[in-house]
Amino acid sequence: MDNKNNMPTRVIALGGLGEVGKNMYVVEHNDELLIIDAGVMFPEDNLLGVDYVIQDITYLKKNINKIKGLFITHGHEDHIGGIPFLLQAINIPKIYTPKIAKDLMEKKLEERNIHFDNYEIITPELEVKTKYFDITFINTTHSIPDSFAMLIKTPNGSIFETGDFKFDLTPVGPMADIHKMAKAGFDGVTLLLSDSTNALSSGYSKSESAVDGTLNDMISKHYGRVIIATFASNIYRIKHIVESCKKYNRKIIIFGRSMENSIDLALNNGLINDKSIFIDANDAKSLKRNEICILCTGSQGEPLAALSRIANGQHKQISLLGDDLVIFSSSPIPGNAESINKIINKLYLKGVKVFTNSEFSDIHTSGHAKEEELKWMLRIIKPKYFMPMHGEYRMLKRHTEIGIMCGVKPENTFICSNGDVVELLNGTVQKNGTVQAGDVYVDGSRIGDIGSIVIKDRKLMSQDGILITILNINTLTRKLLLKPNVTARGFVLVNENQELMQKIEKKIAEIVNNFLNKGPYTYTDLKNQIILELLPFINNLTGRKPIILPVIMEVNQAN
Figure (cartoon, rainbow, N blue to C red):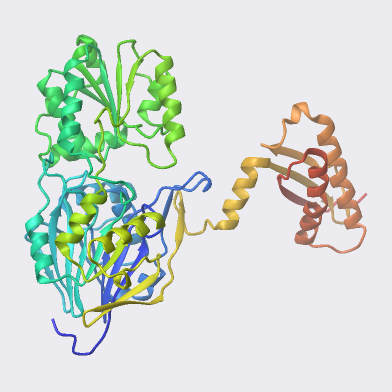
């Protein structure tokens, strides 16, 4: 593919660098632009009231006429969760997606009443050709079926994008197509973009079949009910839990909406073949306890998930029994350890046996490559240039060091941030400028209008509460008709602090009357004056700084 006009091919991350989640990558040449993935990131605790964090897609809006399609590597939330928001913002001519990801995606769009029907299903045989790009797809192994890497041939060289992957020589699903990867490496890869999530973990990830063996052993030997909490998106894990239960004559009760959706998806795609193994909770009364397995959400300690409600004794249909075995077939996502430990403690208090993943019990394995597998990818692909992706900075840094160990020249590696532009030109690669990129907050149906000031106000309200004062002002006499009406939420218990509230009311009346005596006023000036004087007064009395909201009501009333 000749580059007659000597134009660069640009690679840009709009999400996924310096963070785990929110993946979105752009490959662009002249008047053609490919989008790879459109994920979400779940908010940290400091983003109060925020449901999701998505990409700033200003760059896509500016180049909307160039977009040839959205390419999905697999169906996890950090790769497809942002699609409903993307489709509401810009026109995507076609979505190229694996079948499993399509099914998950359609459910999301249906929930938001968004209609889209121009899909093309990705298979290992599919080839997509545009004016400037030739794109092929390579099977990878991950914790969800239908996961693919992409090989993109451009006028300036080949780009290999791994998607999320691991190397598992005894997987539950299909093997990664190592031969096709090796062929790409033999033909020559200019730039490798590779998953960095587990770059800080040494060795190899455990095989999913090792987890299968451990869970199989637990399900077969335990004499009571088995309760298993795992990621609903880990469909291969769910598949072999089902197979083990079938083998040892256990029926499965499902709890959790996302788990129910995953089971439906697995049944519809032939990954699970026996629907009769699933029963309603009411039907379990006729079974012995060693004939029951409960499969549920809540492996991360989510307060509203099924396992949390079971542990708290708040579940309508399930109460814990002394001979129950609870298995956490997952590892804590960073930031969730405290929530998980609280649930585990509650389970122990109920007298049940609990198993979590450890070096002594193989009940979970990651879907992401560890250090030795990352070396495999680098050695198989043999890239001239290397840009680690999908990870926090420390992960990208370590992956870069691994790349150098595997023969990539230090000057040919790029640790990038979201918005950095990496350009390929006639077989060489270099950084060249930046584009707008960042975080956009989604709060319910509101997208992008939740900024840092709103978040700051929410933090203040969560810490110091809110105080609302309603003022009735006579516009003719420019005086208060009634004493200020003050209410508070999250500030103090009003009934137990009557003296304090009276002092605040008296201070507000003093501020308002002094201000009104100065002559004509505006709402804004009066509100600002109340906040300016009242905040230090309250802080001096209580040591707190609540959000103060004055509400002014004007009345025309002659004496």
